[in-house]
Length: 113
Length: 114
Image (cartoon, rainbow over all chains, first blue to last red; front, side):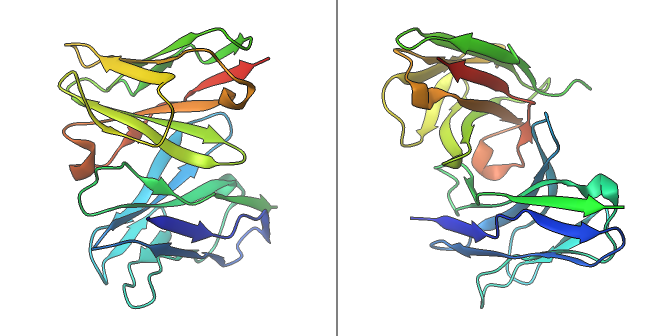
């Protein structure tokens, strides 16, 4: 079946550091890919998405490019802030979307001042 | 515009009891999906409701059920609670079928089973 693999962390960085969170997937067909963020005590918020190969999603300084050849959707940010501390989830939705979103385990990101 | 509202936010039950969780979607959204989040299994899809009908269901036992009302509000029920049902239950809504839209999540209902 479909699956998403991402580093679980915690990943600890200093403020203004460069961020990469790796995400790879296994899916049949052409899934849509998503990054969601969860702040403490809150639900999930959509961070960015890409629906076809080579699409780049971006939001709030975060970017991710849909790479079909490497089945990857790595999340990057050039300069992180303390407020970026959260848990980040990579997810996919298979072509038909019949089984809902398939999520990775989540990556806990900690940004130190 | 109000977001997705889940009630209650926190609840404690004992094994064998049942629980009902409620979700009010964003006004105008017709699809409601439910997910279970646990430290061990992560986020797992429970089911999706659209136009008062269950459209899709994840790999959960029959103890997990739900329904959707004509105003699109949804409830999920877990009967004969087990310790392993302790989790954060997240509801998400979308304007149309979930497979075609981005989901907006609520803050969740945290269930503890003792």
